[in-house]
Image (cartoon, helix red, strand yellow):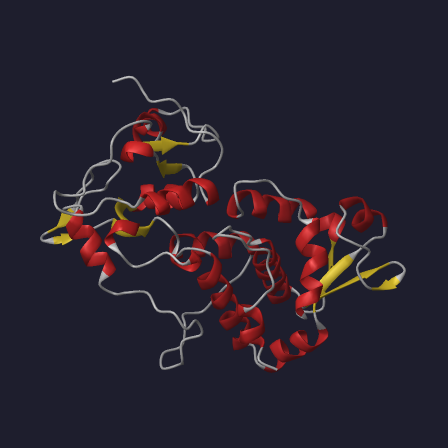
Length: 297
């Protein structure tokens, strides 16, 4: 059985680029727990809070219950659920899962495959990460689910067929003249820029093209906050700051909340700015909550 292919084709509700990473998040969490204890199971009542926190931090802006993937991942053949009555999930309702003592774990055949080939766990995890989340979040997400991944093996065939363009970083950083589009940071060591990254506005994992009008040059901090939904780009290419972001320090004000309503820095004349369709996708699928009002100059 090709577990990588099965992991790459989880059935998810989808419409017009809508993010639905509920199953991948549960799958990653289960892989992390398997790595810790290959014989353990995940009782819904005990892991509900962990799963809810993962969905809140890495899921779509709209709130959803962890009961949904706990029940529905069974249909993909990688997960099983048992209750006090025996095999089978009682349904996707929180109350049903709690009252029946529902517990889940990776499917028996998958557990056996992971025991035979330990490296398979890391390859499955990387497929899930690449297909559903931007690279800036991979490290944080692995830490959140308790996954320890080794560096990918060299010479192995790519697990994800679509490849990122290596030229995009250079094109985007040049378009924005090697300055963060949010704060203007332009640090270098000699002639080499440091702490500047090319961010996809519409995530590569969700069909975002490797084009300049889908990119922003961002410093490492603002790239992370952009991909976490704290920052966004609104009409008139002005910066959005989520009302859900809380920071009382001077640094939090200067580096985040004071950005609300400011125009982007760049791109240089003659370069296409971020396309409206990509901005709209990020605002609906990544940006959290309502934007703060513009900060008075």
